[in-house]
Length: 239
Image (cartoon, rainbow, N blue to C red; front, side):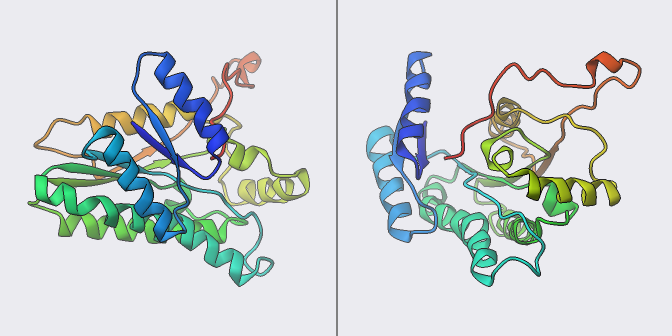
């Protein structure tokens, strides 16, 4: 596996763990908002490991704040990361996949794209646009041997959300509850999302998973001692 991220020091830790567990991994700097960085990453990955069979496009961060309170530049940055960046990656690997008549494009969406959430308008708009792009890929790639899928995780314990200050997350949680979007306080783990993506990639040829939504399981309603989830692992560090 070839991993790409902006923070190469965090990337090196993950690569080391994969190799220590018997896998084969390399890591290279990648900034999906920079076309040259994307091209360099793909070229380095191919040189190191050979043809790219599966692309997982999951770069992301989010701006919390009401649309009236965030700047146009902040709004645009979400489109650049979640939509344009994902398109850059796909465009870079698609020619080889089309030539080989096989390959998988797997995009990380969000349940926010399916059910918009206040205080996440820029992120939600970008992820909703990503759904439209993936849907078009699915139609346009039909019959080529290249599959396009999108996986929508619900609330997930990663540094992207857990680093937000209380003055931002507090009002957001209140509004989510108001709109019926905070039914319980359980979160997915990064490993849960990883297993879902692996399941999509390993679907036997002849079929494909177009859309998958993954949500954290709620606590047992009749067991008050289980109202707080003991995750037992840290969230995946933001890269």
